[in-house]
Length: 293
Image (cartoon, one colour):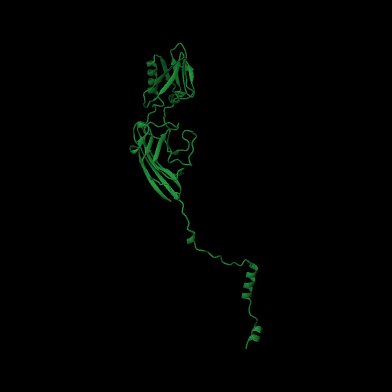
């Protein structure tokens, strides 16, 4: 078995989703050549430094679609990080831009929002096409009315997990409840730092997964959140270090094996006892006298 360290800096990658910087391709050929003598390869993420550069409201969480008087409308929030007060201010302004007056309040007891519309007819928030933002606001389904209260408290915590995934490094040792992530997760890192700080991960458990491939030509890396969405890194770079262990098969040359001859064994325990008994029996003095010359 031998091991290799692979250091990846996102600045060196081909960026497949531009400034999102979370779908990368590293052109590193011949890391492990295809060889029939290789039994299998194991991989582990040794360490990672990832800046918390993404926004709470981004391209996948900034839109709220609604229906009023049988017509479809939408509001699009400005991408960025929000607290409760700034979120209410932004929502109110965007509805006003569409000609709709709304008063939005946040309960300090329950954490629930209340949308009170000054309209003659009910308004409907459409969940399936607004799931990113409505999940943050506390909705779990579409709701309609003039006074709308989401089912859950507003959640401004943002991304909770960074799932580092790869097709080339995929293992048979990882599983996910998400069908999107499948078994391509190499490591899952909790987000335990606030915005504009840096996450530093070190693999203290030394967990290795057995790779599906027995060779490695080039590396692809994806950063997904817990919902299987590409993380929007806003063009900020990060670093990853992988360790791979290569296990090889060895052919045995039978001509070099020495022939081992089986040793004869006396399995007759009774015979052994009698033989020992004969050896230990004292000689007959009278017989010795007769034999003397």
